[in-house]
Length: 426
Ligand SMILES: Cc1cc2nc3c(=O)[nH]c(=O)nc-3n(C[C@H](O)[C@H](O)[C@H](O)COP(=O)(O)OP(=O)(O)OC[C@H]3O[C@@H](n4cnc5c(N)ncnc54)[C@H](O)[C@@H]3O)c2cc1C
Image 1 (cartoon, rainbow, N blue to C red):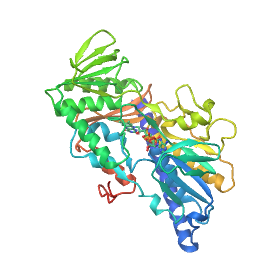
Image 2: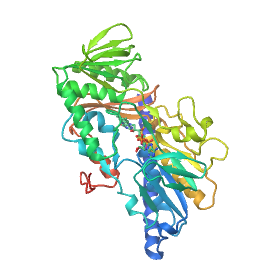
Image 3: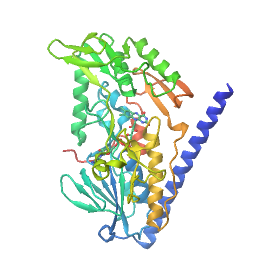
Image 4: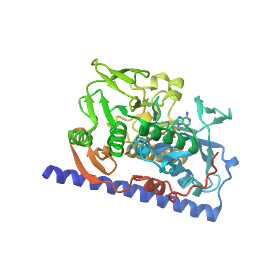
């Protein structure tokens, strides 16, 4: 019991610290906008120093938001964001929207909620992809433009080969929605569904599919000895019980090594064969660190992440003006997630703001026990929340009322009214 009281106190302290940080950021933005109103702000073309941010998901978007709203309006610096996606993709709901119909549009949040409010000239937003990086500039894929930078932020996250249910391999909202609808259709028509990977995406898509279509055979294959193996035992047990209770067959310590589409079977390493007309792959997430790997191979860790100093500057000679944060950075975060990505973004933004004012960057990132928070759905109307690490943690069971999950909160978090999107879709 005393152990739990201690953990609740740690959770409360963590939430207060996050809230305090958010209030400081909002207050800073209000002051900057007021200054811009009184004294005007430097036009974009007159700001000769570019702070280039590559990727605008949880990490990159937060860096852009903070710097753009806190740079002095007369600053010679401007934020240049390069992001290929037309919308912010809310990854957390993707497994659910691969099964439940009619919510697809909610996973794609229009950008601009905060960056549009920054003083004039503070932000240039480019819908493109960075293909290469030198010590002075980045090159874009479509426009071929070469953009010089004073500071560079790599926030390219991670990716998977197979796309959904973990990532959307399209850059336009309409095409992304179509991919989700196709997967819903595949799952609906399947008789024997095999899901590979017992992390969050695998557990969620398998339990949602079985809850929505109880007559289907759903099998979840995982190579480790427990589902959600990166988390504490309480969550591992809850995940297994919740999954099996719905009637999903869970196969642990085995892996899919081959598939025969004609006979509609998959082969497992153990020699076992499973009937399978639809296979959903939820494994193989890798950091998207290619840009730095080309520039400085020694700055990449054995796991493929970008090595960083505590200030989140990239390790290596002469890289003090290049930062990395989020899933791509080697921060030793036990379970990289949006919360830790966002906290890292604050460190990066604060350090760059210090440098832009001629000071040395001294904000450092440290992992926190509270970052290991996760909400895992176990079917369409049940979930478990877990906060902690692989040794100790708190588990909360709850009923889920909204099939769309927390998409509306994400829209508000991005400064947008759910689900008003006036972006012109192609
Ligand atoms: C299915 C799923 C469910 C999840 N659920 C949760 C959850 O419940 N809670 C939680 O906290 N976390 C959750 N996560 C983890 C969370 O989504 C990630 O930790 C978070 O997205 C990391 O953010 P990021 O900004 O580092 O990278 P990413 O989200 O991976 O984004 C990287 C961005 O960089 C862009 N990019 C990549 N390469 C380039 C380039 N060359 N040029 C320009 N742009 C580029 C991409 O388009 C993308 O927008 C979940 C993840 C998945 C996959």
